[in-house]
Length: 184
Image (tube, rainbow, N blue to C red; front, top):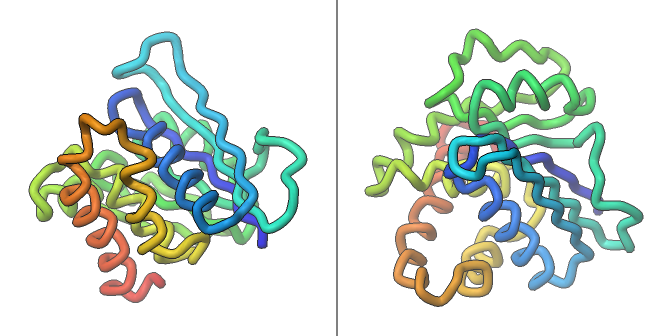
């Protein structure tokens, strides 16, 4: 098994956190993992992206030029990374911030996810990142959703453990959305 993903958005959207969470979850399942965060000049509001590679065998490099998949949180990230997703790859797009009609990648399976609205349903629109990750995990099966949830205490600083229930709800809602609309 081999899976790679570029996760991209602006600082403050939790891009780095979901990359780290995916990596920790995959490690806990015994997979080989690399995680490489990339920050723009400014943190909050600046560009942020990261790559995660998950495999059953050793990984040669954490650098992913042409990803198999992408989680795209905002329009500038779509413009930058959308064309790089491999033919027959997968792209999860936050349609709360990106108009669906502007997404034109016919050779890529695209998941249109109203992440902020779904996050608001579970009580906090700032959990859009978790909605997106839950959806991608449900679609790809890269790791078990339960394993991802179990990784939360390891990926979150202890002072944020009180947020685990909300994050869990958002991960589950993202997965439900994919199953609900037949995208799984």
